[in-house]
Length: 373
Image 1 (cartoon, one colour):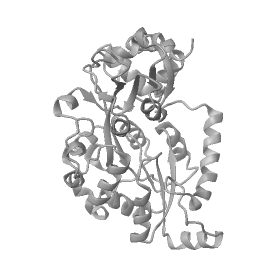
Image 2 (cartoon, rainbow, N blue to C red):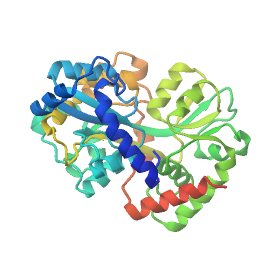
Image 3 (cartoon, rainbow, N blue to C red):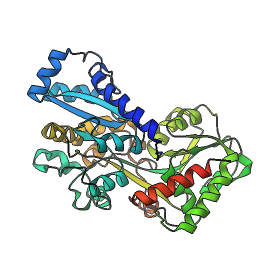
């Protein structure tokens, strides 16, 4: 997830999404719902009756049919938009350019938004299906949301290496292979400052949340040495590129890895022995949300076991919903080490922490230096 949007780009995104929300009522399932066109008169009526919920989520991070089901069951119209990175989402919520009712940030960004008083406490009386969330993930979430007051886990997973068995000769068990000249031009590196530095810091034996300048400088130099080996810096594109055999190695999120393995049997996923990041994305309600009760109805709907299962089967990212997991019929997926890694794997994984604005800038500057030759 890239950080540090330049000012001009940020302004453009603010304007674009503000306009996009006005158009969202005629969008289709991935944020653009067919058959949802309405007139200005209709929109005014919707606003007067509060039968609306403005949702801001990651791209391709929900089964489109779930949106339709929610609207049908609750009679609440969903205005749905997507973001690609936490850092794209943050300024929109911070400035109030669009008053979203429910948003799905990642762990460290939730922690940041809590510290900046950007979120409302949840009323769990309105979220009875919260009981379906496994205690183990609620405990993990307390690292960034103490007492689970502000967020409900939606999806989770790990970061690892996806590799093509026909293009990689040796066993893959270390981040070190991403710095091997043998694979020059065949490496897809993740274009995300925190994930990239996590890889370098972890490989060097340091804390992935390091605020030690010398360690960050060493990590930067390692990433800089990788520059000429990288075919492309990507996020979402790694999936299609690996499926089509365009590269031998790629950094990927576990949920994407499940999908790629279905499409190309030559692909394998591994969490390196040095350790990695385990992330949790959760639903939150911004302080300026105008439809809080509808937002809580949305969160409760997402926690319903049949809906959580439907989303899991569609997006393939691991669900923290214990009731939904019990409903998974495919035993291979239900017992998948990629979707649900063992305790041994999780022991060597940690969550990202919000490090503060100063360190955000330091990380971003070093990442830009690493990608400049």
